[in-house]
Image 1 (cartoon, rainbow, N blue to C red):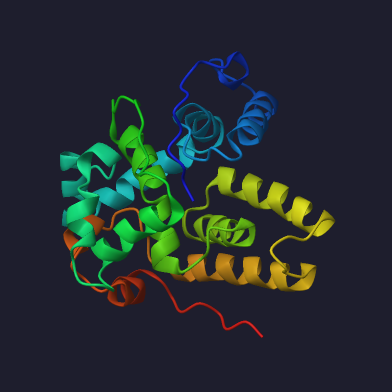
Image 2: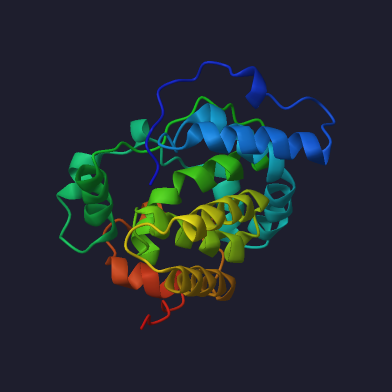
Length: 237
C-alpha cells in the first residue's frame, strides 16, 4: 500500500554519490528502506531505493517497451497515474466491479491518496521508474494481494518474479527475516513461505504489467484485467 509521503526534505544518508560501489548502494538502500516504513509512498526514500538498486533493470525494460506499438506510444506520451491526474470521484461513479470504481474505493477504504512525486522525467528510464511506483496500488487490486504485512511481501515477490527488481528482492529478504522471527497477521511461518513462493512464481509466469494502459481500462471489470495480466493465484490450503 502506497501512502503518499509529504516530507521531501533531503536526507544526506539517502543521497547516492556518483559511481557508488555496491556496498554503498546497499547501505543507502537499506537506510531508505528503514526510513520509508509506514510512509511507503515517500518520494525521497522511494527514489533513493530505486536509484541505488533498480536503474539497470529499468533501462533494460526500455527495449521491451519499444517492441510494441502500445509500448512505444506509452514512452512517447508518458501517461500519469499521479493524484493530480486522477479524478477519483468520477472513477468511483463507474459500475461496481470495474477497475476504475474499485481503484477509487481502494483509496477511500485504505484512507490514503495516490502516489505523487516531484521527479523530473529526463528520459524513458525516469518514466518507467515513475510508472512502477504509480502502479503499485493498482497491482494490489489486480493481483488480489492484501495491504497487510504478508500481502505486501506477496506483491514484492510477484514484482521480483515479473520484473526482477533488486529492490523487491531486498524487501522480500528483510521482510521474510522479520516474519520468520516474529510472525504477523496470524500467518504461520510455513504458510508465509508458501505464499511468497507462489507469488514469485505467479509473477514469473505473468506478462509484463508495466506497459499496460490501465488508463484505458477504467470501465473494464477487474476480473478481466486480472485474467489478462495475471496467472491464477495458487490455491492455499
